[in-house]
Length: 394
Image (cartoon, rainbow, N blue to C red):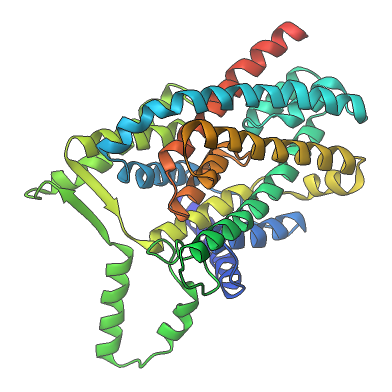
């Protein structure tokens, strides 16, 4: 059973890494994520028989993201948390406004009924909205299809927007551009385009040993700072803390509890003096591939048929346009209120999901704590308030 699950995971990562390589050759932004998502999404949409993501992939990805975020938190970052209060209130009000204002407007100008339009406009988790759609006798397939369309649009559009913003900032700062944003090549993403050249080098024993050492150093480049290491337990302590936090918050039913728990308990470990800093671009690239695999799970031939053959083109385009435009506006308000740079404010407000936006913040060197906290705030508000409000509406 375990061997089969590992084999299926290797198959998914094989195609995901192939997508990463192709998109890196095309100099696409965030190539591991977009490449894996595109290749696997196309394969799933065209009916190619692929194994489903194993049950442990999502927890592993969420915990790794939490560790990456938590490893970057410092006492100074924690002191800045008080600046999140007003942006969090803005995000909460906007998230509910999208559901009931934009959803209500969508019901008036399209053929969708009120509840289907509102649930289709929700930026909460797809499983919760699908369950709520079943409970309210709304069109579940429409809710899933519109959510998938908005997710696909966001995953492709936002990295391109960020590439433009980062490139513009670099040009203003006089930095030389080489087709890839400097923040992506500054120790975050591994240049997978160099792999074929590495494999075709001199195959003598000395060169092979040197390449193996180089690869091991690259993959396992995890540095423990602050306290001197005298025992192995000092190294394992932050990882044990992250695992404990992930388990506890997941059991408590906190939205994205695995990621939030790993991040929170990693911060506690860091503040206690055992700070883990991740410096491996290979691990980060594989993490993005894992995120792409998870997103591609939302694609299926059934979803594609609903998108292509149902009368959803106008509602999907209108809903996505209104939500994206409103996110730009909310990001501008957060930017003015908090003083954060606009790209960080937009990542915090973007309707593409907690994991995706947090990994983009890590990729582009933006504040992942601000982004993940506001994205989490939106999820909590939608997952708690929308079902309660619907209970009184129906």
